[in-house]
Image (cartoon, rainbow, N blue to C red; front, side):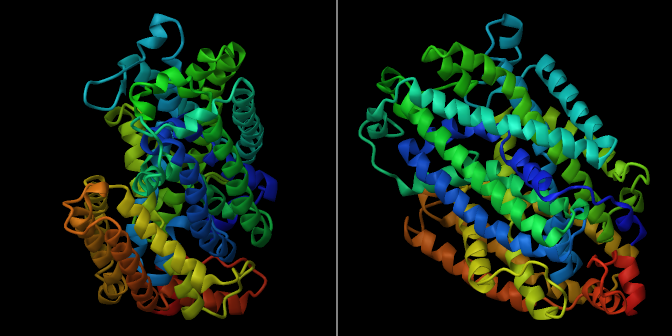
Length: 554
């Protein structure tokens, strides 16, 4: 626990909320409204509202967990506490992949927006590839790499420096998107645009298209920043109040901004651009900036091109901080080398973990050179990472009722059940083959888990495996249903549209019940129970795997 207690608790509730808001309002606002309209037309407004409601239900389950265990990198620890090391590892891997890849995608977003500048050298930074996602040129990748290094350095020195700089950036990020929405609406709102469908013609809400937009257009990706206050819980003052305040406040403020931007985008597009192919026919490299030029708001275009560095960079800095805490948490699970659990005593920052994330960020940057291609990977990995939170919080209510909960969510059984079922639906809405590809990506890391399990002599492996069967079966089942589901979601159409949504909902309910029943009183929780009895006033931070085994004797 020495390392954990050396982390400084310098972040107050508003700074923590700004951390979440700074993560949420990143490159998603620059591209999300455009992407959502291409998929769902004016129905994109409902996609943002539905996405916010789903994410809030999921986030509330994590709010209880984050306040209960206020530790750095907590998002990768909760499955370990409730179901053992295998569930903990799968959940941690999915969560880390979803978060660490955001660092390069934010840098890519900034550079991609630069391609809308009038100078040829800037336009050469990004180019379209026929039949595929666009990608950055070698110079564009180089500039994005420099931005990633800047994010790294701003977090390397201290948590306080990070929190202060991020709060200022987030204020700017909140004002500029809101001002963009208001300015575009004031410039002339074309109400008739709301009658134009995604592919042209008359608009009618396509529920399947709205659902797919929630999962893949950047909506889930945009709201994923709610995790940052949870992962920084170890640095929070009074976590029982700060974490729920930060999560709910950040999601609520972001929802208002995103819906405003979506309405503004739909109303500001010149009607003649929609005449040929509807919303799907509009291709922007820097959507809001190019739209501002079209409606003669040149001052706004300049502001947006500048903010294309500020908004993504604020998110990139935030995720650079939170991913380091996640690696730190994974080391405490016993599935990474000890060096990644080291905290620099002067700055309070897990610096070795930051170096690992820097290397991995570069790998993502060089293999996925366009915002669209990397955002698609992030979206589905994010959805998988949400699965364990609702199950873990309910399991711990059953297996560890005596542990102190500074924030206890009312109606948890219902909210957690809804959150898990909606996570299942989100994964299905993402469409085959992307669902199968990302589920397969979860398997790639299992040799690392088996290496560390073997290194520990397969200690109680049978019990950990028993606690994980529900998650293993769930991922296989969802992949199979996605493959044979309706054509609207990329499947073979063996399950007709409408029935497929009901089938996924039933699957979600069944696996939610199975998952809660599979939880057990793990060594980490047993050790924390003993520590809480000896030190009732101390923060509840379960020891790492090795220490837990020493305390409990198993």
